[in-house]
Every structure is written in structure tokens, then in C-alpha cells.
Length: 316
View 1 (cartoon, rainbow, N blue to C red):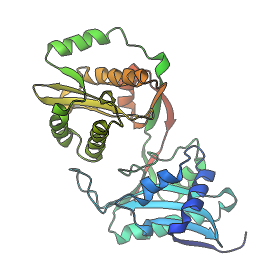
View 2 (spheres, rainbow, N blue to C red):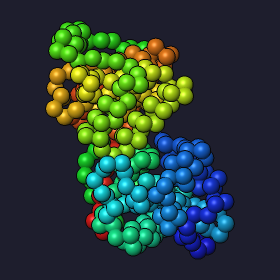
View 3 (cartoon, one colour):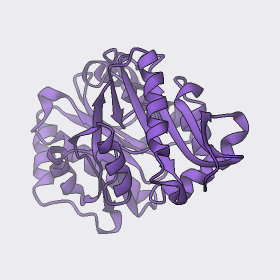
View 4 (cartoon, rainbow, N blue to C red):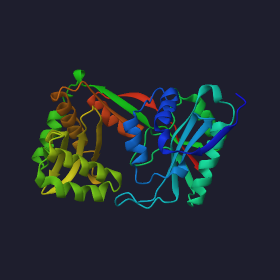
């Protein structure tokens, strides 16, 4: 245990050992090597200076992933002065030896060299793993980040729904009829809605959701997704809201134009997607990130809180 711990940048042949150390320690959030390739190495902002391993000789005993923005998110406000820590773990026998502190200090030096003014845990788009630190699953991590100057901003929550128990509240059909009578149409994807939806996204949700929706529509054209994976509310050629799911029980993203909220469009879209998922034989729906206010909408679809996270920030 007295052998020196080296902190160095990730090397190409580290992949299997890094995934192993992540899975040994982030037991509530295991990943595959394919997910690591896709969400880390193939991210256009990836830089080995922010991808750090802790080694005892040839053995990898810790890993940290820090990200900065090299390329802007689509139509989003510039955030080149921000940085994010997406992954951090140290093997249990090596904790309380300042290894995490050293990893954090080295990545902060990288962030400062990139002129970043703040760092967050986490929320990095497009490839975040968790929306923060799960204080139940990883209490030591929360303590570690707090000890080096991170403060909680808020606690987002994840939710899950049992689709076998899905029902439509009695008041929803009347609400939907009223919207339809007012000229709102609810339709599954069709090509005529591509451009109205993209215009809507640019105005209402600039940033990574545009890429996400474009990818989903592309998958529909190739047959990977069914057209009912994406529902759109629109009127007079103008999109008002949307909801979608992937093929692996993940619900979302989901959004309604700011001026249209409170009319019930979101509830109708939510149920359209959940019943589409159930029709495909899926038994559950889940998503990683929302807040208390939005959680009340999801309650209509039977979603229940499954996890909480501490979203944290530190000024650099």
C-alpha cells in the first residue's frame, strides 16, 4: 500500500482497466466498454488532459473524466468558460489517501488553462452519465467534493413508471377534446412536421435537444425507430410541443412551448408516448433528470421518484 500513486492521462490501451475500475466503484451506474467509447472517447470535446487515471504501478485504481467545451452546442448560449466533471472513482482500499483530491487538483489545472471560470458536477451535454452525485449510492463522493469547495446548487431527480399500471385520468380526454377543438393536432412523426419541429426546437430549446431530435427523426427514416417514437403537437403549421422515447425504455426529451404551458398539451403528449411504449411491449419508462415542478406533470403518467442527485458547482 506504500507504493507511489501516479496520476497520468488516459492511454489507448487503458480502456478495459478503466471500465473495470468504474464498474467496481460506481456500482449503481455500471457501463459497458461500448458506452465508454461512445460517451467519452468519441465525444468531440474529449481531451486526454481531462481524462485522468490513478495508477499503482501497472494497476489502475482510480479515474476522473473532466470535460470542457471545444465546439458549441447547437444554437445554445456560449459556455466555453464552464467545465464539468462527469466521472470520478477510486478503489475502496485506496480511499482516504488524497487520490481523489489529487485527481481533482490536476483536472482543475487543466480547466484553468482553458480559461474556465466554474466547474460543475455534472450536467455536461451531450454525454453526461448522471445529473450529479447520488448521495445515497455515493456518500463518500459527496463528502469529497464538498471538502474541496463544491457547493450544492439543487437536487434533480430521476423517475420511473410501471407501464403495466398505466391509466388515463378521467379529466384528460375532456382536456384533449378541448385542445383539438381549439385547433391543436397531436400526431406521430411524419415528414411534413420535420421543419416545423426544427424551427420550434431552435426557438424554444436551443442546444443539444436539437441534435437529439434530429437523430431520432433520422432513425425513424432508417426504420430503427417507429414513427410513434415521436409525437408532436402543432397548429397551423407551427409546432407547439413534442415528446419521444428511444427503444430501451428511456422516455424523453419532452417539451412544450413556453407560451403554451398550462393548457394540458404536455399531459396529452406524455400519455401518447407512454401508450406508444406500452404498445411496443415495453413494461417500464424512465428518465434521469427533472426538477420538483416538472415532476408534478409526470405524476399523471404514473412516474415515481427513483433517485436524487446533488448538482454541484465550484468557482475556479
